[in-house]
Structure formats: C-alpha cells, structure tokens
Amino acid sequence: MPHRASWRERLPGHGNIFTPHAGSMMIHVHRESGVAHRTVTLRSWQVRALRLLMSRWFFVALGAGAMSWSYLAIQAARVPRLKERVTLLELDARRLDTLQHALTQLQARYDQVRKMLTVAARGDEGAVRKLGSDSVSSTRKQP
Image (tube, helix red, strand yellow):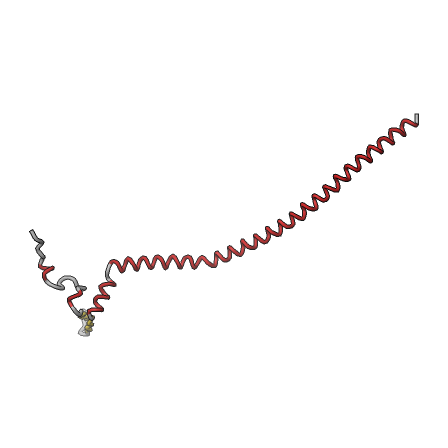
C-alpha cells in the first residue's frame, strides 16, 4: 500500500514558514493596544538565510565555535602567568648555576687543602719517628 500524503503535506507551504518554494515572507507587526503597525517583507534569499540561522546545525556549530573561542581565551589569559613562571624558573636556573660553580671551586680548594695536609702528615710522621728515636737515644745515654 503506497504512502498517502496528509493534507498538510499536500498543501505547499502550509505549517512551515521557512518553506523555500513559498516565495517572499511578509511579517506584519502591530501593538495590541495601538494602531501603529509595521510590515516587513523578506525576500526568498533572506528567508533561506533565516531558515539556516534557525536550524539545529547552526546552533550546534555556534556552540562548538563558542566553546573553541572560550578555550582559546582561557589559554590566552594563561600566557602572562606562564611568562612570569618561566622568568622565575630562569632566575632559579641562574642561581643554581652560580651555586654549582661555587661548589666546584670549594671542592677544588678542599681537595687542595686535603692534599697539603696529607703530604704534611706523611712528612710529620717521618719527623716524629726521627724525634722519637733521638729522644730514645738521649734517654739511653743519661744512665
């Protein structure tokens, strides 16, 4: 059994004000308690544009655009804080480099002093032995 069109489908332009083949659109505006009125005529291309603006896809695209622009705005707002953070990190890196250089110098000085004390200690041991043997021999000569 073939599909039978309803009476709304058989009447062109009935029920859907954005029907493209219906031609121009006349909008008549007047106040409830006044006699002033205004009539606006929209051409067929304006009706098509209005139909596009009132479609679901337009609202979906508008929402997606608003979300992407809000994301970009948030990211752009973060830039000054990120620049400040980078500046602080660079300052910390310079401080660490200075401390590393000072530590290297102190380590070299420490090694130098340690080497000097090690050499002096080895030399003192020989002197202590020599002094010890002299004192032992001097104590033996007295009796």
